[in-house]
Image (cartoon, rainbow, N blue to C red):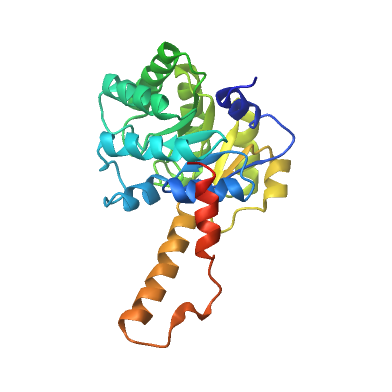
Length: 268
């Protein structure tokens, strides 16, 4: 029987682009699975918000692990977790957190460099790999570099800087490369061809459609916080109308309570 860890790896090498929707809690994860998602990821932003924290490495590790355990309980498909920067600048502590996340049910993780030195993320990746090996799980480590997202290099140097970091992270034990805000087709094609790891891009204005991304060599497309933001947007609109005493906004079609209950009852 193929484990979820092995299945998740296979999803990066099949003929189709891996469409990876991002959940923020157990209920949203179960919904995404029911809609046909072959794997589910967490969005760090959405999960942080659901636990009452802002995005940006503020979530206590105990809260993270509890959330992952709850999500893993209600889905059968592979689960990968956005661990932000690992919630510590100490690689050993990051390794401990990775071990806890794997124990909670994750078979993949994201770790990001942000504005910290690339060498630090490389050490965190190596610690994550060691922790996964001790746990006996073929963890898929997705190395996120923010070269484009946070303008970490001059525009004419971003491509080469991204590829240099890709090499460093791959040598440290990463399995995939995540480059948010990479949208220019020529750059997407070159990173996909030269990174020597499956390329993950983020849903972003100006990004090519999924079929075209696959032609360019992309293996994985993430929705990021977009679905969670859409839920917040709708909730704010409804609540604003309610609090203002405006016409009952429930006229818009809503998912029936019985359908939601039935979906979750299947995982009790």
